[in-house]
Image (cartoon, rainbow, N blue to C red):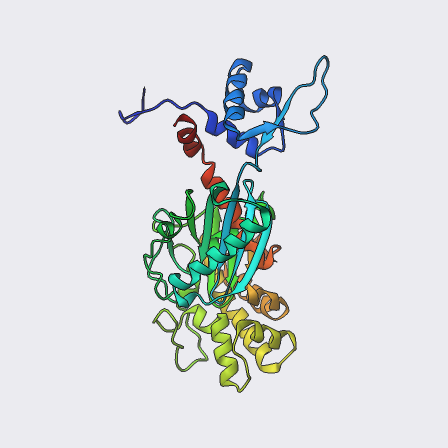
Length: 399
């Protein structure tokens, strides 16, 4: 046992978890590469490599590189030794995916759903998609190393619980992990949808950007934050709830009622459901956000006017976030972000007019590159990082 600076005792670390993290960040490595990257002695490298090979978490790589004398064996993270199951649960639909242990998606399914039906309806639908993908790939439940779900509501990440969600009827503190436990003996990660989306964009599209913000424009309005290369959740997981910030609109006589119960929220003006509400009030036969988006793209005068107004309102809300957080990149995603021609002008105008000049000096405002797949892509990386966290790996290999 070793002493810590606080006087508590903990088991010695073998270093296997950290070494596996090195392999996860490279396509393949030789023993010499490992020694160079880690600074470890050759004897220690050999010892740790043998332990990881025995556990099956790394494997000899194909196409071994020739060296003088005999080939220097190359090794790689064994992403095929198991699978991850993911579900991006939206307000009106869900995307499920099956991926390898590096987060690469191998199977994907989409189905309409209504999150307000509650977990007793939605989670069996998720399980149905999972079962379909397992059957399609020939996998069994015990091949699943981790499960990830994201939801359109506030999440206590450590507890894996949805907390007082404005629109997710029946989900408040529902034991999602416990629901999956009898079916899959593996960790279950529960995350806010915008956090999964920003993580996907960060890891796959903007890996060199340490500070960025993702604005999700769908049925509701939300945001995810990357700070110093990590998801910023705040003290209790509530960070990024930009849609329920209240914003004064001078030309409105009465503030609209939001789904959270307050009035004057950004989402109540500029969310997809608010756009549907206003189009219906104008006499248009619109019942879904996708139909509202079609009206905007078709150039309907009322829809375009409302979209441009939404852009200015979103820009005003974002300007505060830009001044407060100083992100390098703001990514716009979600269904309504596809109406960029009508949203972006007002949004950019308000951000550059209201934010601090230093905060906007190098700011980039860009559309999502992952589109509607951002959630499952981000979940794949999140769950893989959770499953192969160095401490978790140490515990598993020492058991």
